[in-house]
Image (cartoon, rainbow, N blue to C red):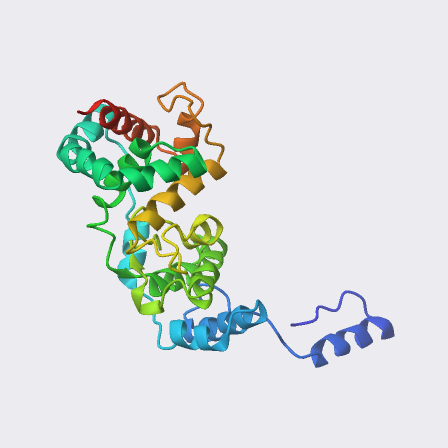
Length: 273
């Protein structure tokens, strides 16, 4: 830290000398061109927050920034499709498989609704729209993507927190770092949870001791229900626009077009034979 002498006096000079002699602990700033220095400082912070050295080493050793992630972040466009365009493109190709999923996981979905109050049709609609029922979860290494966005200055604090939560997922045994692959902005699993949401809402519904939103459909669906319940889902109430639960769907995705598409897809699934 560089002391600025504000007054020419013995006291001010002493204060300046004291400041200059103190050890420097300034964090390496985001976007400084020194990613390795930033990462070393981040590792120290992670350890100070209770994350094990084994996890830090396994997840962060050799991590480098990913320019393709930054390109996607910079290239985001405003969602411009109308509801008719988006829902017309997304719902019809997924109706048959969605109906089959409702039947295949009927008993699981019934138990989930008993526990969390969210109907299976809503969960299957989200599942289908997010990843085609787990088929397209994304291929970006999650730790690398989050480290890239945490180092970048645009939303550094937000993604620094997400990176810490990704390490916590590893630390508590849910996933290994190499298993964590998903969307470019760090979403993981079959309904695309950010790490912070995983930490807060993921549940082990299949009872195998792990919260696995990548491979376990029961964990995926129950965790999604737990998320919606956490945002105020009211059991037995309407989920269409104007209903009390539509606002909860908007907490899943704030785009009204997307939220309306979830609601419409769920309603069509509920009416399907």
